[in-house]
Length: 155
Image (cartoon, rainbow, N blue to C red; front, side, top):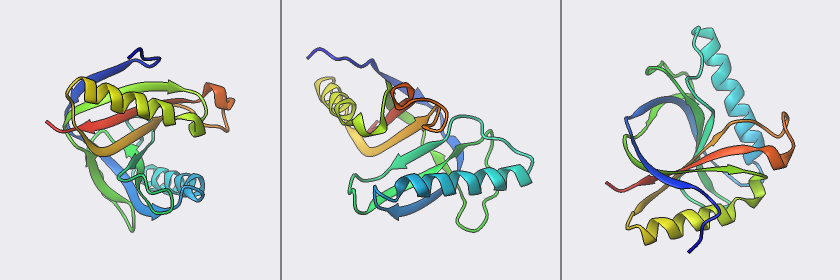
């Protein structure tokens, strides 16, 4: 198949993060993301710390009414959590990554292309997918939104 997306497999070390994990609906997700990012940034600021990379949402399922998501920021080292902000990590191992530019609600073809590519190339996804957000709808038009999609793979 001919792909419109550049998909590559990388291997990474474990990445410490501060995050909030919750169950939410797709309709409530934007508000949950905003509230969680703000709470984590405020907590990091009180510790004199900054995120080490772009904010992310990890999707542990694709049940649009009961999404199991982890919302957070990578950190340069494990940092203390507080209340519902937890110390966690993006696990080490193989990942399939693809940069996507465009509206969030038009990502489905990218997911389909990645899944097809993984199957054709003999990779098995774990079912956990991370999205890293390089900008936001408040900053740029939807057509310019940049998202790195990262599928965790079985080793």
